[in-house]
Image 1 (cartoon, protein in one colour):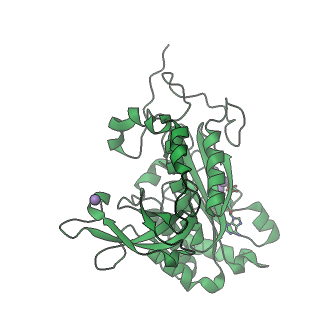
Image 2 (cartoon, helix red, strand yellow; image 1 turned 120 degrees about the vertical axis):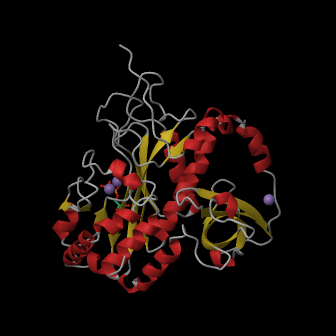
Image 3 (cartoon, protein in one colour; image 1 turned 90 degrees about the vertical axis):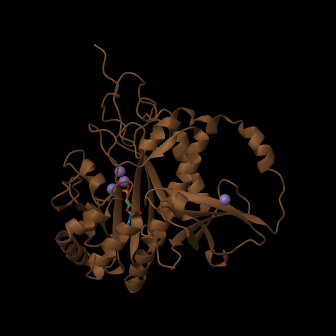
Length: 384
Ligand code: ADP
Ligand code: MN
Ligand code: MN
Ligand code: MN
Ligand code: MN
């Protein structure tokens, strides 16, 4: 008996029409490209790629300009602007959106003196755009700087092929068998796409991200990378840059990355677990502070769920079902070591009576600025 072909949710309905040609990017002869990438360029000049979050709050955009000096920090990178009407961000005649550099990295694609620069977006009145959650997050983190906040972010994602199918899944025979062997697995029957994962890890190290690790995840073709432990805003900054590097790199491998939190009903979805600590939590007796924070979080569950995916909870409704190592969308729970709770405290933290906690609710396509902002405001600023 023939199984029916499974259909999948993808993050954008527009994409189907383009799908078949997507692997074209990977088919160009890279030796030809290399001939030009190896050309000597003037020492005093460099290419800077400005990168920003568009009006969807989920997608990244970027464009390049030549600078006639090599910046040594983001503060030296000039402000710029772009056409907001093409990024779901502006209407009418005055569509310029301003780009304010906030973090600079080495460019692992162009290498040399070239840079990737993460930017915040501001409208014509110099107010943060509606999807610029970094401004508020940076403000919250600054307000509690004496508590030395740190974040660790776990980005789960699914590799997808040019036909919009999960990479390596059998083409006409439905889903692969659930074997339970994919998580941290080894062997081609258990994992697929490791080339991309390895290349991404090295590129992130080269660029200067606080990348902490990577592992194969529970679903076939699903992986995770971790950022942190990072001081304050560098955590969410590096997560966004890690996503950019992954998406950009996937072009070269003929695949693309889905950050959709629930592609397949019968398999684990994808999250962006957010680990948080402050100096008091890491110091002796910090468990008490962690418990106080969890108590505050429990009272603001609904508000947090609105900020933990880009559609005010719509995405997480698909994922937080109580199955597949998730909690329920509607009730806040916390536990030691339990992966089916909203917030998990590690066994080690309990044993040592100090450490950090893990908020498991954010979806894989969340904006980590919105998430970290909410956690800091609820736990330390009594607002959210
Ligand atoms: P698991 O999959 O078991 O939840 P991971 O190893 O994938 O755990 O992720 C743990 C995350 O916790 C890492 O990103 C790490 O940087 C982060 N982390 C470790 N210590 C702290 C801390 N003191 N404060 C905040 N985050 C931390
Ligand atoms: Mn133009
Ligand atoms: Mn993890
Ligand atoms: Mn995971
Ligand atoms: Mn986790």
